[in-house]
Image (cartoon, rainbow, N blue to C red; front, side, top):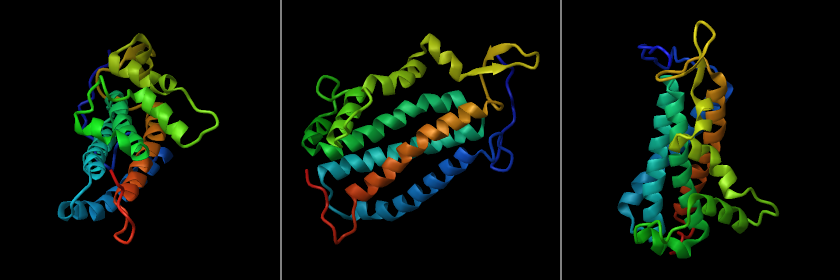
Length: 215
């Protein structure tokens, strides 16, 4: 294990400041939050459909998780940020899946119970099929990394390996401030999910002159 780093980083001295993918992460989260600030007030004064109520919850939770991940990156807690990746992906996938399969909204209303609702891997496959992809990636392949990290499988070790000052390989128990590859990997994976959140905002809450999605 590594020795703990007590430093609390700020936006001026965070360890991965200047990474290109981190910059793009910041830009897309800013754009998404700006759009959310315009959409949110409309949801308070309107009679929402079941799909829109679902979207209100999953959009807000997705943004909260993304912001949590960004702060974890700032403080060097990269492993914890990677653990949250599945939580973000699952909410965005649910939202996208129900947008493409609105007939399934009753399962959400009934609690999205394990025995009734499709699993994450299945939803990822169904989304690709619905979008008429000629070839699609099997869902279990997409979720394999997330499952390893969340469930503490042996191969999850690569996501918190560091080298000590003596050049020894160790498992980080606190901040990881010298693994830019881990930071880049996380940002590259998170940016598309946030982009989908933004697209779902537009889809579920279009301009007033456009029709709202039906149940």
